[in-house]
Image (cartoon, rainbow, N blue to C red):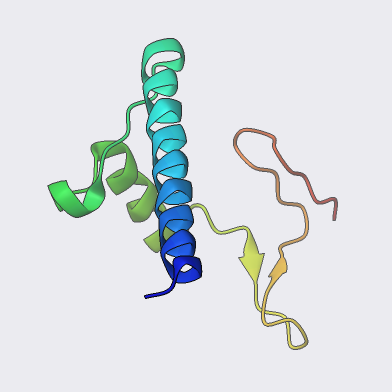
Length: 91
């Protein structure tokens, strides 16, 4: 292989390692200073109780704020306010 190809491979590997290190550092920061825990769903193969309740509410239609729209396929329902008051659509 030429020097240019080796340089490109080495550069890509270094960029990958830097990005992974920054991501890991961000997870450590969130864990220690913000109390946010990262749970790898692929490893545990089980949703937390919080996520299970959210999915149940979505399936039961309790969290639905959208409705069918012939042009878009969906639209926000009129008069909807989120529980956390993050959005409000007047009637």
